[in-house]
Amino acid sequence: MAERTQPNKICRPREDLGIERIEDDLLILDKRNQKVHQLNTTASVIWANIIAGQETDGIVREIVETFDISPEVASQDVTRIVDEFCALGLLENPAEHSNH
Image (cartoon, rainbow, N blue to C red; front, side, top):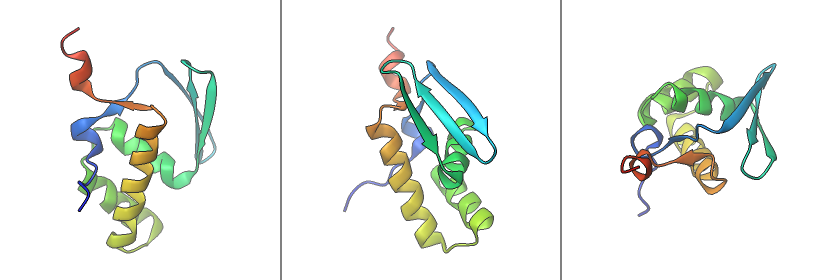
């Protein structure tokens, strides 16, 4: 079984990202490669909770309450979206910078 992603314990948003809110969506400018990522409402809620230091279970609860979906579906969505943030390089492991 794959290990469950825990965004606030293992990663955080990179400090060099540009963030712009447009209504319910967020635009994230990756200054390293000049790419813009548009987050939908669900991904925006997850991003905001990661920034706030919320643990995975807290993010799942927020998604359940905000979108009135089951905890199972919310957990899958949170894991998938956080994994995508990591794959895009938008999140980093704080331990990587602790020795610098």
